[in-house]
Image 1 (cartoon, rainbow, N blue to C red):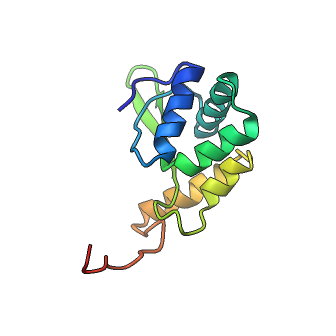
Image 2: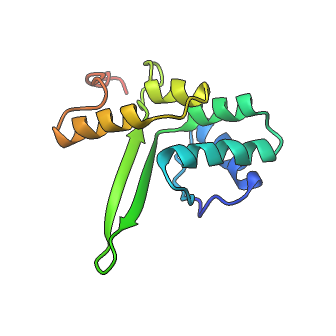
Image 3: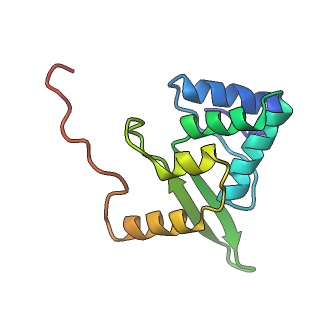
Length: 134
């Protein structure tokens, strides 16, 4: 668990931890899912990584982004948007490809995943039971 990501150095360390198999949970202030991903790439670039490498590391380490925005005046209620990557990295994944290619207009993917979840449908194909020898 990492606190808020606010510096290039933290971003660089978080990305390296995420691609080495560590589960990283953190917060970052952003106006949207896309802004959070863009901020991660910009911070990593400021830490000395080139933009292509930063996007590649983020695409390989990401499992999901949850964005919460408080709405209302007297009574606040959360507006939540989220997007997830397939945890089975051997399968193709639209989020990972879009992040790697720095195509961060994710509205259609976010809406599609949210609709599936509201309908109780799985986001990704079930890989089936684990082998007995595990």
